[in-house]
Image (cartoon, rainbow, N blue to C red; front, side, top):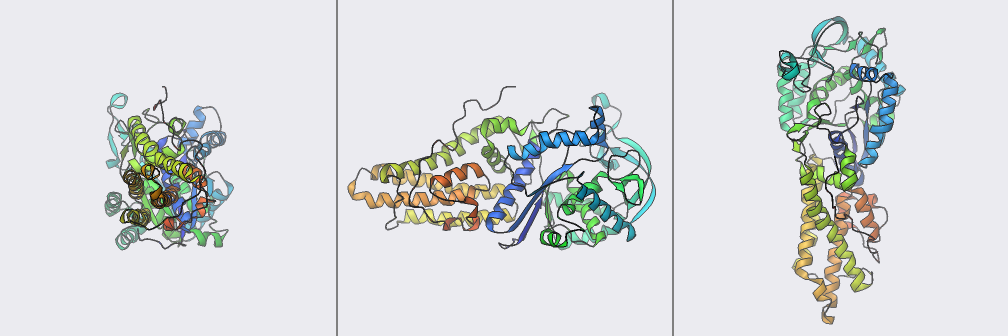
Length: 525
């Protein structure tokens, strides 16, 4: 992605999640990634907006609600209130808006958009027959199906959900998506970074090159959805409905000032739904005469035991199972550090426990405690003034500047794990610097008082820079540390100029370690 200068608009949106079940760590992974990017840009001074929400229409929601003997609306209300909004608190998400597809602002926006496409000749009525996966809410091509196994042996099943598809024949309304085949290919060619990462881009390009069919965008076999404005016997296809949340949330058709300020967005999605966002969605926008998204980034899956996170396959892990043990900051750090963003990544309790102890408790947490404790012990909490700097001191300063620039560049490329890896170089450099300089030994010699002051001042300056850089990743721990070193509002310190912070006169001891040791790394079954 082409780097954006500070002060630019940065609108990032997560996909909106189905409320057919409770969230697992795969959902939280997407939320945290979007939140880290949003916090970074916000702290860089960009006009930032983070949108998330829930997708509440469609046949899958209707069937789930019916199976629980409640109305779809009651089911959606319950899941949003008890599970999906609490998820944001569990992993500390700083979203600016939360949209539900049952919101009146959204439903009216969908009808407004659909009416425009109808008036402009992009929608027509026709017959359609095909294999439909309720789990995906999508008609499937033959290449999307595989032979079933076990109970479904002898049947064709969805390659994603491993469940049989249904043969449906309906009289529906269609969007002339085939009209946009060449325009989409031209978009991918002229903006190579429109779809990221490269492997997802390649899949999208190949899919479109095979030829696009017009898209069935209405259903009349059930009524849980947005009514087609000119024919209320039909409801809008759930994906066509859901994709529009990104513009209905920012005032499409009713608040031009807000819309122009925010749009276009960066769309952060799982790779399995990249096709909807990189093919259908830009075609819809082109038809409406609106700009396409700034970028579509399809990140990899979280795997457990080599399989994609799934409730139906019993591989779903609730985020709170992890945060109850390690805390939200450690959850956020682990998933942003341990997985190359854009690729699949395996989760294991052993790995998160090992990284927590080695990198957070012994690495960053111990560093913070040592620096503040030594300033408290040797200078009664008064921040020492550095004297003449040696090459070792200057190396720490140079590292602060270098990792700040590297992290900022990586975040503009969505390389979140690379940014965190660069920042962690400063953790390692500071720990090595303290070990080599031995301030505890300097403190025993009266003639080394100035050198002791320089070492601790240098270490504190590096620690403050580190606190600013890690703020978007671990907002709670860094806020605690920032207050301990006598600072005010952490998010007001520009993250792309992290080393420019000014020391306060004094520091305060940390009441407890930032990352206390964990005795039981995995909760009881």
